[in-house]
Image (cartoon, rainbow, N blue to C red; front, side):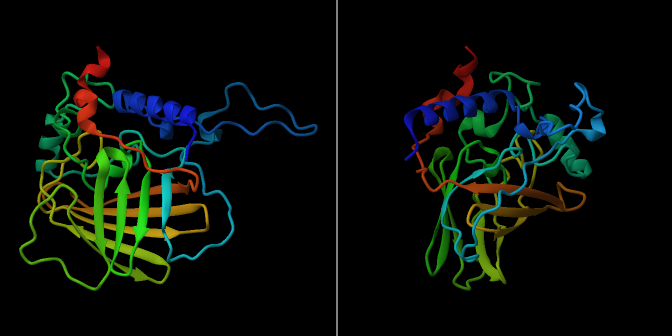
Length: 271
């Protein structure tokens, strides 16, 4: 159980990220301190010499690679508005829809002006945007499925690993229909059957009913879980969009109650 003070600080930081979109991925990781007789680092090092980007995995003891259970949170350096600075190549339709998005996370629009469906309507974020919400998740495994309990708005996702196929008449949903299988030490999750009511990221990049998401989860050691995501959508994306997210294990954490409706659609946060 996390201490009350830590939880309070974490939630305050989460609200700040939701309102400003200020992800840690846009900040430098800092310089190493000078050692011995080495000269001190310059006050303003050249851009190409600064260490930027997500923090690497932290070494830890080995663990069963097929056991993903535990409470995980994205490592420092992940999060923000999107998965990378460049973004995807959009089709003409995708570009048109993207221009209609009024994202507040980057500061271009206020919470009263935004049309972000997560903020204004409390819609589930969808996959993979759910990973950009600044809240931890818990993975539970059974012989037939992997269950992901996202702290954000009590979102629950079932990934069936019993060999079933996607339904031929799959019903479109926010989180889609997910089936998974193991390839060596990697859990491969295939998800289709999305509705078109969500964004791919917090910047407003769109998708259609054709969205197909492939996730590859790999537990590197006891402490680190790596996720590679591929998004395919011939209507919105000119080519597949690849993203990488890293998670760190927090064995002393538990998932808390977080309900979107209790936040008044976040709109009152700025008042």
